[in-house]
Image (cartoon, rainbow, N blue to C red):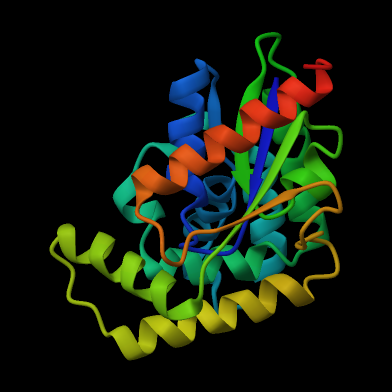
Length: 213
């Protein structure tokens, strides 16, 4: 069983994907970490004419060992870098095979990101599109960062989220939209336990219907 979980930053998709993977005993890949790792690798090229070439080279050389520093990878600054490298077609192409190979695990997989149900796994058994309003997403991300001891400017963080949404939706290579056969789950008013219960119910119902149950 392949479960595709898509949605904007801080919508809760990563936490839900982790919970679904645990519930169904499936491997999980947060594909956003791939773009964050590439962005982090080329941070020093941010204002350079070499930024795009460096990002492509970093994407082609990426391996799983670069996904371990979660604190650095999940910072707000790295999120901005990730959205900048994600609009580069050759970066997306370089990371496509990495994601497809993970999805082809014989036991199945859970992948979350922004184009899983539309580009990476268009034939996924179950597709979820997670959304929440910008204010709720800002507050969630702020709490995550504050738990690590970071000082958070909520005004700046809110605008980073809004700007990233705009960049993601305008990305001509991204496929960032709700797939026609994806199930919409709005987590704005849900805590993680309620959201996970709702997601599990969607998966179970979808698989039962496919099995003729």
